[in-house]
Image (cartoon, rainbow, N blue to C red; front, side, top):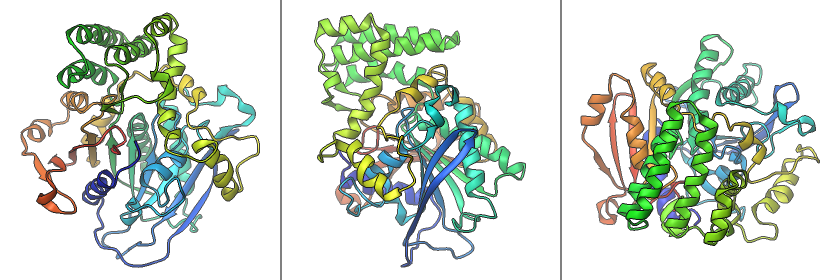
Length: 446
């Protein structure tokens, strides 16, 4: 389930509409990386690529994209970089389509404890416990990188776009608001040009409510399976409304297991496929035992994201092997006692209290402040299904919502134009854009 030429080309097309520059000139690219101590004993790793096609003509400065991965606890420096939008693929060969054609790329292992980011002594009490704490750490990093005394990075004047995937969407909206506060206070010398939310976990309640009906409509569930899923989804809704977020996460873990059982191990990232991970290959008896052990379920659920990563690399040791040998040796600054992992269970556990909290109000606030917000959704995603995303959008209190809803939806074509068929739809009004990306899954990659 790797990146396909079609889906990456399509995402590059939509990115071209999201970012301002459209012309490119030949030039030399470069890269920088390092650590920022965002709090005492808490160190965040970043990696910046400057585009070889960089243009700065004054009127439309060359933009910078801050990419935030999901999980929470999955590595943007690893996954987003080498498997999605960076200059090299997992064979360390040039990628045919990279967002570097439109922007400089800043990858961050966020929150601390993810990927190459770390806390000293492995002290779990230093991990971020809320989305807001993670946002403060990210904003601290941005303040340091955009510091006017650090001209080496040349970020000043570059419009900043925060682009996120999955749970990273919650980090994106909270970080955008924290960054705006820092900008207004004079601590961050940046221009926040926009936020993009890709298949984002903005409203867990709306996502899970969409699972049963969607799987029923595409024949992965029968009526019995639909009723089982809907009953648990309604329970999650009630728990979220009662602010019982830990209980809602437990029920969510149980719902995922019921979906796997009733839909015969459907792939949560592409409902047209089966989950090929060993975690999905569970007998009915095993599932029933795990239903009685939600702590075990939580660990299994978290590994699904990382199994998606490791399945892409054939070298011995998989993707973790690549990151902990070739990449770690290249970077040279990673402490010896820091081992890169595809998914940090410690980070996931630390954010348990916030995992099921919605961030719709934060999106609303960004829209009201005039920030450009772009939402894109892969047609075949289940975990953050398009239906659920559309449902939470309708909960916005933004005064442009009615006009947005009634706006026409425009078909989009890439490469061969209409000859290749419709590949996406776009609806927009003022500072809100919504892309339906056809034939794509959760990572807009399958």
